[in-house]
Length: 123
View 1: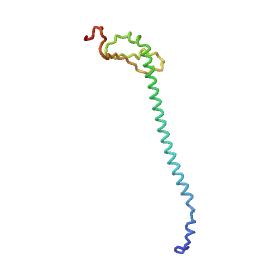
View 2: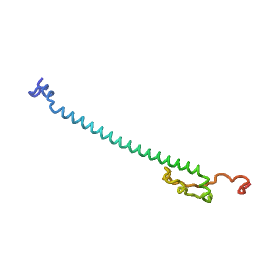
View 3: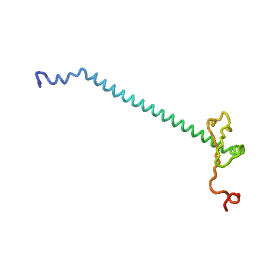
View 4: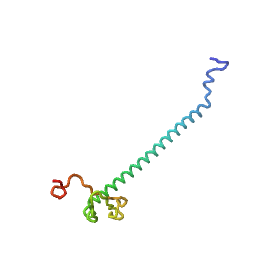
């Protein structure tokens, strides 16, 4: 089969630069995949770090709450507590404790009616 004096099969068989173009295409795809994986990994690392910090803060707050509950009588007797006042008890947390970073406060709040017979009830 001839086309303008040239054999069409010879034109199709001339693929000297095809390997180079194919390799370059594969390398571009590999680079794009690599960059995407790297960015995804970076985001996942940030998420894991944020989750770790959130859990650590939660455990410190929970430990501070346990400390206040266990030592409530001692902490409450150290101050004259009045309703709706806030008292900072962070200084009572032992030094070197994991909860030393916590800022613990007590707030006395009255909920519901006063007990009957307490002298403050309406009845």
